[in-house]
View 1 (cartoon, rainbow, N blue to C red):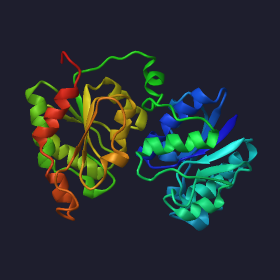
View 2: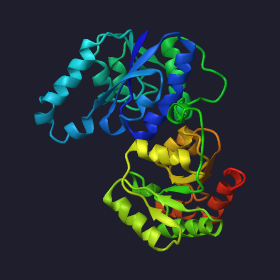
View 3: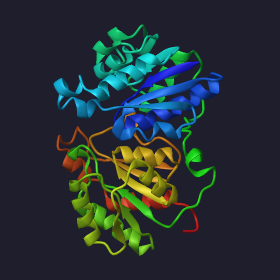
View 4: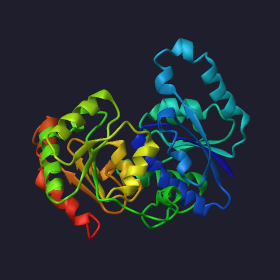
Length: 331
């Protein structure tokens, strides 16, 4: 059985889809997937052994100049690639109009969320098979259930397995003594104050842990530079692609992250991590996996509408204590 998966963005959502592939590969003998994904995240699907072909798409880039780019060679090639392949089914795991539009390019039965389950209910009008999935489930479990309903098997009772770590390390593990701090996020309301990062880095330094600071844009690099300038053992990393970040995660003892896609990547690679949440919900999108600790701000929406206040209320000492509780022994 050959299935086209449409899950294009964002980074965390792409990562959250991996356990469903692992379930499907175990439940349906011989099943293979091609995966349509935004070009920025195209490295990740190839890490899973059930994926044959990654089909990059650039809707985020093309929509900036739609008249030019949606009549240009890149779009024509993408559309042609989708139409010339044979699929037994299409699963739109995103539930948006843009993902439904892409799914509709393929001549195969389309499975997706029904109007009560999809983020954009109109998308469900395009699907031949509309599937109900409760909205109050964690994102990973929602996707696992969607796949199980589409492909007709029972969701395994055990916790979902991302199925990528062993493929990247060959089943072996070696860690360095270092911590990754994922301080950047796409939404400013999810940022943790720089003073808190500095205090946390100082606590890591006192225990002999170097701190590695990745960044993805100039604003994040400037923040990393400011944090590192105040911390003896903090190092600003060069700009890395996703494989580069994954390589460092496989070496790190642990990580601390705000609600960001790289925090979900850490969870997918079984890296002991503490994730910090203010205005977003750990129940629905908390980092999913082993050795994952969520700290939800004690200042919630019932106390304030200011997300900065929510994030500021998370104490660096609490974050450090929680991290120490899950770090590998003997370091």
